[in-house]
Every structure is written in structure tokens, then in C-alpha cells.
Image (cartoon, rainbow, N blue to C red; front, side, top):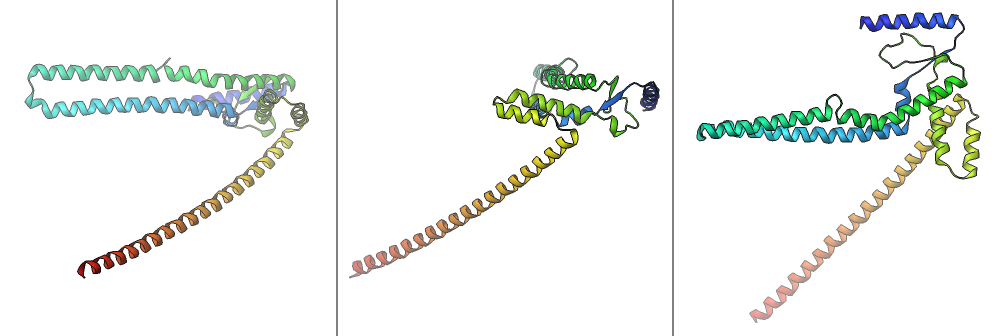
Length: 262
């Protein structure tokens, strides 16, 4: 911790010195940017599913080994020395196998690291390309990452270009997706907006989406209520019908009984 603080102080001194010499300095919050890039969320979700599957496989194997150990402990008095050694050796190799599996999945250079690079690296490259593009356009001499280990003790908002980076990535993604001239024209108009205008549009769209979701939820609720009422009426009708059939049957049975008695 002390080392990190010293590094941060040294970084701040360097920033002040650089700023005094007229150099342009900016910073980004990589965690904030990645959290707001849809492709990163999708990649992280896919990776989480893989990791969860591997963990379940490990837990299942360990549980099986644990059961075998308990069974052996209970049966030892009935087994010969050779059989005990044979089963202990079998358990040992199974334990070794699962340890190797864990290492191959989660260890250094394992599948987790490989898949993380495969899934997430393209998104990180996209972020870095956007940072470089903005840095060149805005003539920044240095761009630092606020979320890195060498934490910055204080950062003024005016030097934060995280939203600019996000806007650059979003626009690049939109340009790839559209095909019609009208959509392209709309995107070109939006690209002239400032960060503040973009935020206002996003907040407006968010409010519209929330209203739409609330309206759909209300429609679904009413639909469920109508269906519930319909099912209730059907159940009442079936119960009444069954009751009438039973009454009719009892009357019929009574008449037949009377006929037999005569």
C-alpha cells in the first residue's frame, strides 16, 4: 500500500510538472468504460458461464472422490490389505487428475487466461484504438488510467475523457451496423453533438425505455389477471358440471334401485 501511495505521489508530481511545461494531459477510467461497452458485457457473461461450468465439474469430481474416501473408511475392516492399497491408489490418481484439471483450467497459461484474452482482448483493443484516436484529435501528450493499480489520488473532471472514448466506440459500432442512407445521416448528425448533448439523449432514451418497459409490464399484468379470471371461471364451470353430473347419477342410481326392489 505504501509503495502504491509513493508511486501515486510521484505520478502526480510528474503530471504537475508536465502541465506546467504546457503539455496536455488526460485520463480515463477503464473500468467505467468497459462496464458501458455492450460487447464487453457479452464477452464477460460468456466467460463467466464457461468458468461456472468448469467449477461445477471440479466440485462434482471432488464430491465423488470424497464419497469414495468415506466408503473406503467404512469398508476397511472388511477388506484385505491389498484391496485397501489398490483403492487408495485409485483415489490418489483421481485426486491428481482433478488437480491437473484445475491447473489446466485456472492456472497460469490455462484455459481461463486464454479464453479471457480471446473474448475480451478485442474489446480492450477497441478501447485503446478509441483512446489513441481521441488523443491525436485533441492533441493529448499523455493519457492515464484512473482505475490502474497506481491509483491517482485526485483527478479533476475536466481531464476525464472516458465519455469521449465511450462515444467514439458507440459511434464506430453504429456506423458498422447501419445500411440505409437515412440511418447514416442520423448518425452523422448525432456525431456533431457534444458529450453533454449525448448524455441528454441517452437519458431521454433511457426514460422512454423505462416508460415502455412499465407499459409492457402493466399490459402483461392485466393479461395475466384476465387469464387468471378466465381459468377461475373455467374451474368453477367444471366443478358445477361435475356436481350436476354426480346429482344426475345419484338420481339414476336411486331409480334403478327402486326398480330392482319392485
